[in-house]
Amino acid sequence: MRSCAVVQKNMKIPNNLKHESQGIKLEPSATGAKGAIHEKKGSEPFAPREGMGQRSAARSGIHRNITLKRLMLDFGQAIRCQQPMVRILGRPFARSRRRVEIDITYRCNMRCLNCNRSATQAPAAIDMPVAQIKAFLHDSVAAGIRWERIRLLGGEPTLHPELSAIVTLLETYRCRHNPTLRIVICTNGSGPQVRNALSALSPKIVVKNTLKSDRQRLFRPFNLAPVDQRRHRFADFGCGCRIIEDCGLGLTPQGYYPCAIAGGIDRIFGFGLGRRSLPAVDDEMTDLLERFCPLCGHFGFARPTRKPRISRTWRRGYERYRRRQTRI
Ligand code: SF4
Ligand code: SF4
Image (tube, rainbow, N blue to C red; front, side, top):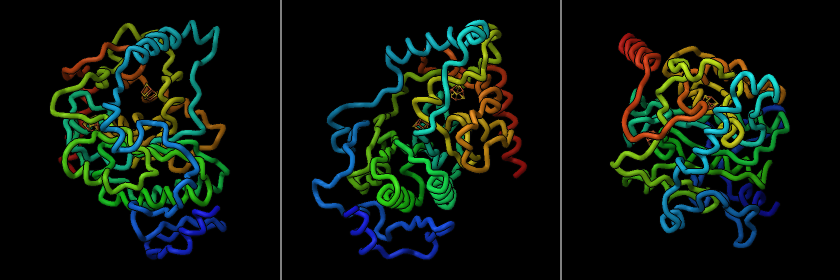
């Protein structure tokens, strides 16, 4: 591929970012995210479809996670995931083998009250090491997995101190192994530091911008644990929710999960259940769904809110988390 040849020719590789094993090389460019892949105009292997670039994001408006269509889907899945329905029809969702979301940091400059990564409820400056992403890419190539989409999230992913090295790794992987891959950054688009980081990105990175402000948005009440609500007593939590299909596998600093949200839950509850290596294709991760979905306000249907809502299990979870933090 022409673009790869150009990258290889111009590439100066810092020793600390070299990774070579089983004949697979993932060597990022030293030039950083901006212009890391020097392709001629017109040679773009894919057309960004999701959220569009940061310049056009401002034109196209705000990406919203709460829509009428999604609420209707949530309502349908609440019924579909009841045990009698599952006994007749089977489980409705299977985890994606084509999409992955990587929570590269839990830092965030916003304080959304129902944050589903607990960045407000339990803020922490935890960053994913670049080596973890390198290992993920290496293992993906070794397993012959060609991701259709890799999303970077957080927290606010642009606050990761090594964002440009991460983006360069991903672009090099796309160039060498997976030219149709979509690389997406999900950002709150708020504040000068975030906007500067976005403007430094290569135009081939797709930006999904929620353009948050100080005004609280509508959120699903993430901290209302289904296990605390009688209406979920006949639910089959091993079903998960449509996020395991739509968003895909979660890679977090705690390991791999059927969704990145489950990794964020594990950060607070401290079960330490994340898989340590890339899950095998036949691993449905149902054991993790059964453990984390009873705690997750995304399970089934819940009325969106702008106010903080928290149930007993989460209140205790955060208290234990804070006690653990003060002991460290
Ligand atoms: S911007 Fe995102 S990560 Fe930050 S507090 Fe809001 S929901 Fe959480
Ligand atoms: S943990 Fe939450 S987001 Fe993940 S599959 Fe379960 S209900 Fe869905």
